Image (cartoon, rainbow, N blue to C red):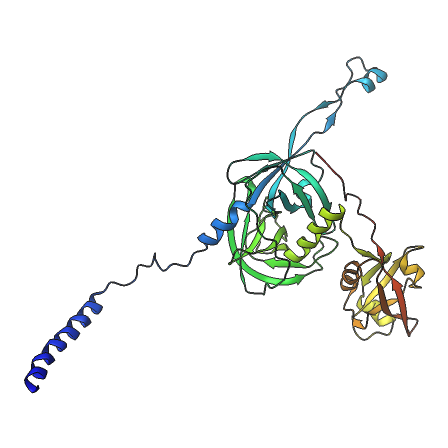
Length: 365
């Protein structure tokens, strides 16, 4: 037994030494094989992002050769097709629904949608919502790739995001950045603002395109940039998927977006106004205007009132007040806490249906 052990010992030692040499000689991992890439995510999502081209047909009346006014008025107008704008859109349903930015298709006579697979088709407008700069289009094509419009807001500051669109008419392009901020308002782009801010490059033509996370979820519709030069300066804004989902479902079901309405204009307090009212904090909203006969007027809300709270929730500014009002279902009741001539009053108001914006439900071929 001792002889067998003595005989096997050097054999095992040799095997271990050989294994050590093999491990030492093993080449380092190929950096190409270990690189971090979003190619798989893009391959799944990019087919749902389309290019949008619009045309306008302005009416131009040719002047009369003899200067006769009546003859000039009776002449047929000449129409010349011109390119209006270009942008991007996101297919959000295999039934052919496409979300894009309202400003991309506003004033368009014709809308052409170009798919990444090479197909092109005319689109019709289902409805528009200028207050959020969103529009819903429809195309009649089969075998469409669609992105699921997640109606949640799990995006956090610092998350990696990818923007897909058609910048400068170059064709589909992907840029990467992070979510720089969420819930961004007071930007002055739309009436109702709750933007995702990102440093992913967004240029002219990206409007209406997709903002996705690294799992391929559609988290926003790219809307605008903040720039002093007109070029990309690292500040872009995307409308969250939750907002886009609400707009889309309302446009499909009602042809317009359903929002609450009081018939009141609420502005932010200035330091001078707050001081004159005896307020030590710049919180609340100043009621600047109350429409005659509106729910606000019927609820005894008056110009000059300071809206301090809604349903016992403290109001920070006029933007927050208007967002709460418009997100409340028509027919519901709100309890307002207002400051009037140094005294706190509690008012109960019934929310009405917000009248449609000027350009809502404007259908075009």
